[in-house]
Length: 358
Image 1 (spheres, rainbow, N blue to C red):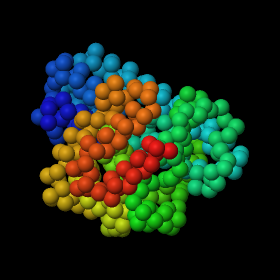
Image 2 (cartoon, one colour; image 1 turned 90 degrees about the vertical axis):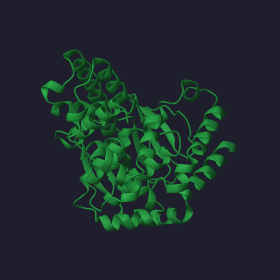
Image 3 (cartoon, helix red, strand yellow; image 1 turned 30 degrees about the horizontal axis):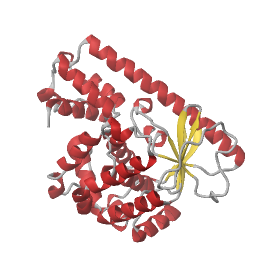
Image 4 (cartoon, helix red, strand yellow; image 1 turned 135 degrees about the vertical axis):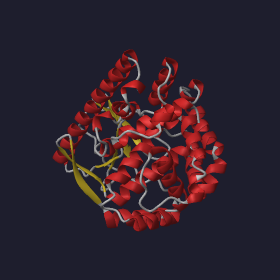
C-alpha cells in the first residue's frame, strides 16, 4: 500500500472516531506532492469531509501547509453546503408525503449521515426512497417540481427536486437470490421501520437489523459491479457503531447467513476492522483478515461507484454501450464474487441480462 493511501486511511479513521490514529506517526509528515495526492484520493473516494475532520488530530509538526489546509477547508465548506441542500430537499419531500399520506422510507444518504460525528461533512450524493405501500399505479412524487431522468435496470427511477437527485427504488434491500430474498421480505415485515429526526423533520428509516443488511448488500452490489468507494465502507462502520447497543451480534450473523451473505459479511467485518479501525463485537475471522486486500484493491480501482473508470466508459451516451459496460464489470469481478456471494452474482447477472433486452 502506498504512503498516500495509508495517510488517507489514517485521516479517515481519526475523522470517524475522533481520536489520534497510531498509524499517523509512521506516515506523516508528507511532502507537498504527497498532500496533493492525498487530497485527490479523498475526493475520488468521496471522504474529503471525514478526512478533513481527521486533520484536527494531526500534531502541528505533521499538519499540511496553510495553503493545503485552505484547500481542504474550502472543499469541506462546499460539502456542508451540499448536505444542507440535500436536507432542505428532504424536508420538502417529507412535507409533501405527510400532506398526501404517502409512506416513504429513507435509505442510506442522510439516514446514515446522522450517525456521523459531524453529519454535514458526510458527502451526500442523492436521496434514496422506498415506498412500501405504493401500488405502482400512482406516483408518490406527483405534485413536486421534478424531472424524470431515466428508468434503471433494477426497476428504480430517478427524479430531481430543487437540484437534488431523488431515486425511487422498487425494493429496499439489494438481495436477488430467491430463497434469501424471501427471507429478507419476512425480515422487513417483522422488524419494520423506525422514525428519526433529520434536520428537524420526522423521517422513516429501516429498523437497525434491516438497515445493516441494506448497507452491506448495497456495498456488495457495487463491489461486484461498476465499483465502490471508501465512503460506503465508512457508512457501514458508523452504522455498526451506532447500532452497537441495539443489535445482537449473533442475531445479525444469523441474518447475514440466511440472506446468503455470511462469507461476504465476514470479509466486510475484517475490512472494517483492518482499515477503518472498527471494533467488531462478533470478532473477526483470522482467515478473512488475510483476504481484505482484495477488497481494498476494488476500492482503489473503482473509486466511488466506479467513477475512476475511463471517461469513455462513463460518459457514453449510448444506452446499450453503458449497459454492456455494466455487464462487463460484473464479469470482471467473477473470482471475487464467486468466493463471497455466488448466488447474488448469478441472480444479478440474470436481472441485468433481462434488463438489457426489455
